Amino acid sequence: MPIQTTLSLAKKTLKPIDDEVQFIRSWIEKPLSTGAVMPSSKLLARTMARLVDPAVSGPVVELGPGTGPVTEALVAHGVDPARLVLVEFNPVFCRMLRSRYPEATVVQGDAYRLKHLLGSLLRDPAAAVVSGLPLFTKPLRTRLRLISDAFGLLRPQAPFIQFTYAVVSPIPRTLPGVHAHASERIWLNFPPAQVWVYRKD
Ligand SMILES: C[S@@+](CC[C@H](N)C(=O)[O-])C[C@H]1O[C@@H](n2cnc3c(N)ncnc32)[C@H](O)[C@@H]1O
Image (cartoon, rainbow, N blue to C red; front, top):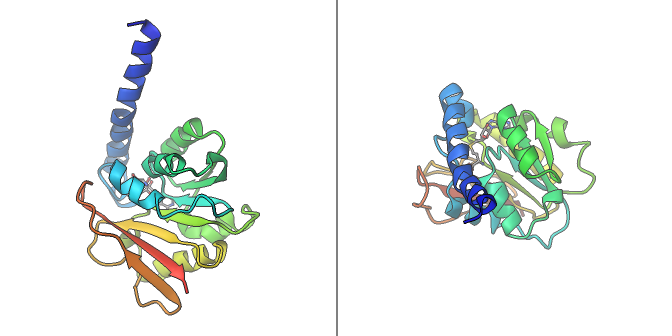
């Protein structure tokens, strides 16, 4: 086998391992804000990405992309990387995302300050907000402000998509004027997770 092919195969095989090592390191350093021991599985990432309609115009905002499993699934699902706005706290993950998705906009910052971070950056209403943030580490009022700010950036009826390891919705499902829907539990993930979609009625 030519050396180039061997190297490219090795790179492909090592990428997920490398991502996992970075992720575990981040979890050891900051367990609460990392919010998970491992990056999301391909199945969980695909389940989230499929809730985004690539035909709807506007930016697709991802909150807490980490090493990018959901980002990868969004691109595989047909979202142009140039439409992606990735908001991540961890500078190491930001560097990885910038090198993998040079066309995307990577914003290093606190996603809970969404209005402040993206209010003047987005020129058009967003087609979707996809979040991997560990919402349950935040008080309810912070979560409510986040979803309210996200709806302020989104097109009418566009989805706010969130995964959780919990068995209940991280945003109260009876929020006035908001329709909430949950996926089946995704067992092929560590830990098993569920995807919630919230839309303004
Ligand atoms: C549970 S991990 C999910 C990572 C990735 N989306 C996945 O599915 O594997 C949460 C991610 O959110 C990031 N994060 C946590 N708090 C954040 C904040 N306030 N602003 C931006 N990113 C944050 C963490 O650094 C981490 O990358």
